[in-house]
Image (cartoon, rainbow, N blue to C red; front, side):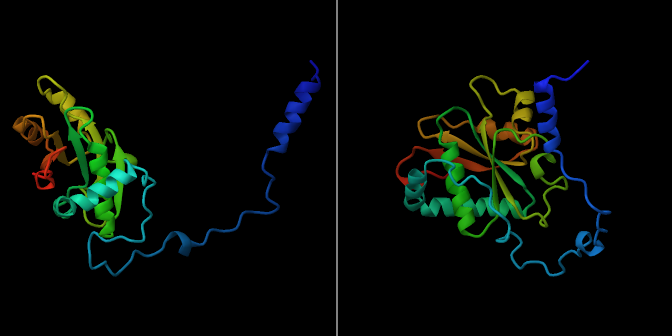
Length: 221
């Protein structure tokens, strides 16, 4: 069997992409580079972590709408951010923003809340959808102790579709979140059973946000 011109050209191109072999033995690893001692001085603010890079989600939501809402409801966003910070200090690591239908404004809420927390120098990570097990995507597996200072906000989607609440589906939808903020449009009836169902699967409800409400004072319940 012989190689035609096409085969020879392919082999030559493939060989040209192989990395060159090192001229000598690889340098010995520096133990000091891999065994750096842990920091000895804790930060005064257990949630402040200004050196950590922010996730690339600055385009979350409509920037103009987010800016207008932050100005119009500054006090409400501050109250909601206080609740999230208190929950983080209590050990809640991943907070799902969830509701019962499309078009409730969940993504915009996440964008406004993340901006408010970052303006306070909090390290915020924004995820979308079900985040799976607690160890997935870099989430801690130790109950969210304070050495990991990130606040994880999850644009979690619909946890309560129309119809009866089904525990297996709710457990799957909320998997990875240990707390939740519920979202309801102002023209929808309250659903107190949502909080009861979440408590039954081990998710702490921090509160309910009523969207598309007027005046702004009614936006946060």
